Length: 518
Ligand code: XMP
Image (tube, rainbow, N blue to C red; front, side, top):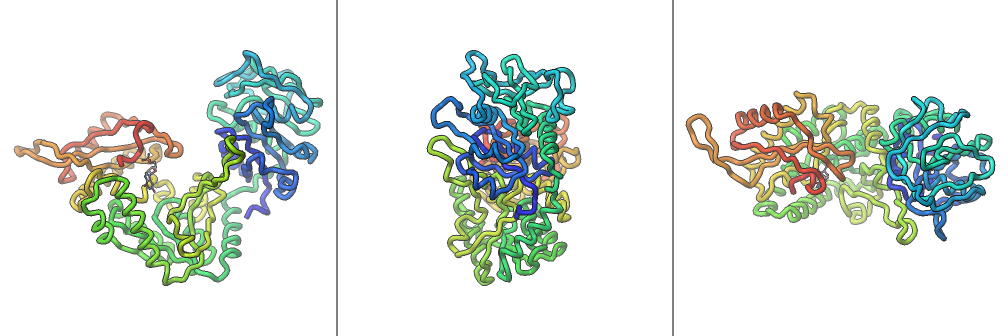
């Protein structure tokens, strides 16, 4: 897939933030891949054919025996190299400099780097005043520069904060330009790729063309099936694959009866009527709700739904005789992570939207988004003409409303929840807040409370509203709505939704809470 792009290789020494380096580069339209240090040999580099190399940070000390190194040959290939933190120390060690334990000079957190007198292309336009804020995280220090290197920036505890050998295009910094706390760090990556001669050919338009060819080559004349949920990943994957192979693709939309208001209609209208995708709308509400009857334990609900989902999918997929299953797997799911407990981790994280099915049905996977980060998938979706209403959608969990209905699931409760959720989301959209929020939803609580409406007493369900900000769903904070917004929303829900007489707002962060109530 990547053969015709200019490529940059990131060698991962195990830093927590290596992925952010890749993000910064992709934002600059530079294709890059992250590979663990012990998978990178001289041959690997030659096969990969990068135009430049970045050595990431990492948790080890170069002074420890057996600590990771880059292949020596890397420095003989005439390629520009940028070392970050541990990567800087590896460069110094391997190129003839010295690193020491940095007695008392460890730096963790915010620091300020001051430029030296002489200018450096890597730093062009970077220093806005006479110093720049950076994020440091190092115990060891460079003690002596490798031959050919000079200092271009210092911080109080890092006399070699920025060093370079301009003749060989080798650069190394002690801090992390990729993190948020180095506010102008992206500029350094921009300068680095510029001086390495990248033209910025990694665009979604180019990706689309190439991905289409790759899908055609992989699939030939076979049939492909895809579980389409209407979420961003599966939607983009389906539309892209359809563009590549047309009606050799069949999508199955499993409707478990736990979707939001109008969701099934929206998905079917969009993909069947607008995109003309062959789409099976498997309305299995009766089956799912029947089997969920009387179940109130969250894990049981998930298991029941997961199993039925596969059964239903298989029922529709089997007659098609498909040899391929399409999945919206993303790059963060496939990056091999470096682990120091026993060499590089053998486990490649892979999420199976339709767990276990490929093996069970003897199918091969088509994963056209494997090289993309989430925001690149959105950009590709836009490129394919998908409307923002799909591209910017908040995540929606596979088990759907089942896990937003703590305790027993009943049809009347689901009906109330759908209406209340729709009013809540409508409020968020009307106030222009939808895109600021990672995920927002209503949960109907297994509690009835007393209220008074008009002259009468009510005894109805309580509703919880949830809205969080997050980067990846792993941690989250509650969204700080104004009291005015919350008051107006509660009033609307109670007035418009029969069955709810009390509304609460959930202000728990994650951790200790989770995003979903169950
Ligand atoms: P939690 O509740 O674990 O959610 O903080 C983190 C993110 O994952 C989604 N989520 C799920 N997605 N099946 C899914 O496909 C599930 O069982 C499930 N549980 C939670 C949740 O909506 C949030 O985006």
